[in-house]
Length: 325
Ligand code: UDP
Image: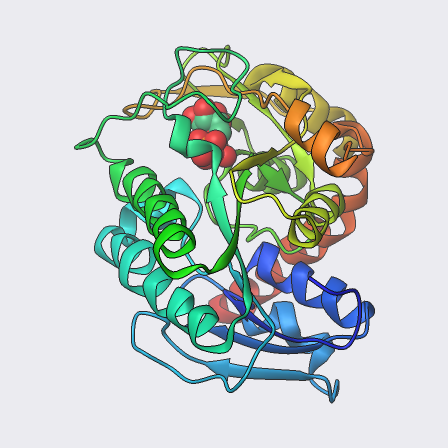
């Protein structure tokens, strides 16, 4: 990927990561065509780009063939990503990982464009190797409730590698680990969204299982920096981009209380089926190939996200009180 003046397609542009990616690409001087079917993305994430002449938004389902015009690079970020969303939209999730990703790859192939696909740590499933390095093939239940996402992403990785091997498309694969920050849907059921909104509303914090399962949380600006470095590299094999500092969910809840100043109780709920018990990226490849290292720790990242969650919570409080009148 060159550094200036490209015309770039971003699928999933109205999503959490897609919208931050559009911002970063526009800031670098590129022109961006953003597409999204708004099934889980939101136009509110792109509102600030309404008057930007180098940004062209199109409401479009990428599972249907579409024509963005000639582009130099494609970032394929369209997909439901929170477990609650992808389990509600199981068939749509499988379609966007297969048909949608194929349509996006066809565009890259047609225009000789570079292609970067948003894959996921879910490719490792409930891992038996810890931390997870890219050469681990994973431990995924192919027929469990999470399989609609995990297997869609695993299939899409196979598809991306096939377009690279058989059609010569200049592809990249990023395996994204849990990422958070402003514009994370505040009501999408993910742990950071749930805990932050619960703390700000003074509700009990819901911890699933005994809270000893682990995740490693990456702040959005670090994630986008890693993704852009990968786009500029010549690496075709998957690269983990995530923060290697691992937290139990109980520790994460404590951190949310510290940042919000809330004094809520913990309410334990059953652990969802196939919930991975531990997750931490081995980022040796990102360090050595891209010179990438996350900079923002969880406490700082939650503090940076606080105004966004406060605003989301007060906006919904206003909406529900005007509905009640
Ligand atoms: N989780 C939790 N309370 C919540 C939401 C999630 O304890 O209100 C747990 C969930 O069971 C999982 C972890 O937090 O172990 C991360 O869940 P999330 O849905 O954010 O994403 P995942 O990493 O599972 O895709």
